[in-house]
Image (cartoon, rainbow, N blue to C red; front, side):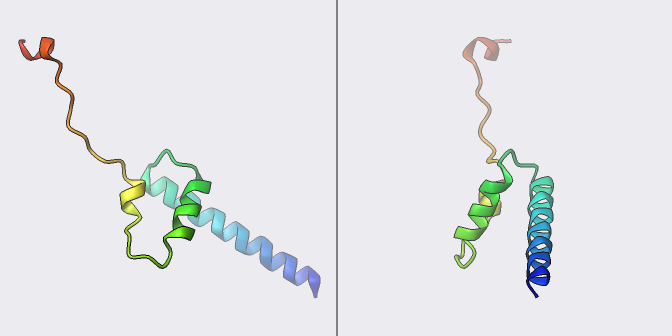
Amino acid sequence: MSANAVMTQVWVAFCLYLILAFIRFISKTVHSMYEIFNWIRIHLFSNEILDDYLVPRMTEPVVKPQLALF
């Protein structure tokens, strides 16, 4: 009976790893899978959207005054 329990744990861990790797691949984030897992674990039952954490925010381009003349 304990061999089945261990195999179940291995399969669950393998599935979780594949899901986290897929999320990391799709979002093209630089965050580790450990960070993604923690965000999901912490915000699982909250109303926050995880895209805010995974997708980098667009910032305004910095225009240097020297280059603005040309």
